Image 1 (cartoon, rainbow, N blue to C red):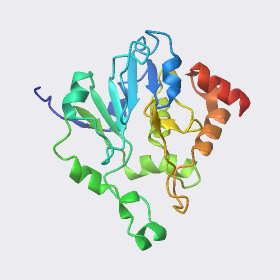
Image 2 (spheres, rainbow, N blue to C red):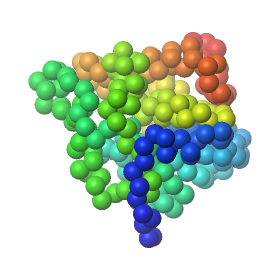
Image 3 (cartoon, rainbow, N blue to C red):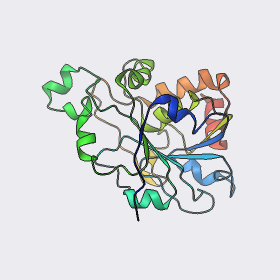
Length: 229
């Protein structure tokens, strides 16, 4: 498949993909399987994260925007993403070291705070319009969560609601309370000693407190979860 010309976009340029449009952000949780056929693909823009799966008409067949941290565990190829219709790649991490962490340096885990290795790994990967956040843009989510790294799905939510969409439908999000990701695979928590590890409870709490500040709609599973939170 022939590659399109790659353009690296700034925030103002990315905004045109989302402004005044209905957007579905599809997470990796099993709740995605509770949608009616056509609900996800009925949106103007469909955003999917990391190793998403297109299993049926229920999960939908479209992926217009691919949002990922683009590390070694991401198996999606450029050809596969093009075949799914991806027109925009959005990167979670900056091409920089935005975080200083004595713990990561002491334990030889600098890849957790210095993300330049991702862009060296992916230098021949890019195939479409691509957004890479600046350090300041990345740190918005990090500081919002009390200096914890946001999950990829939560980063996608924060970014996309900031682009003034008409509506945002969240599906496949349970903030890992199910212990499942990639629809049907076991999710493993990170190292509990990592001082900046993911804390999905903080993300769920933010959503519960800020839901009505944005034009966000929830799938049934997430709606029920928030009522009990």
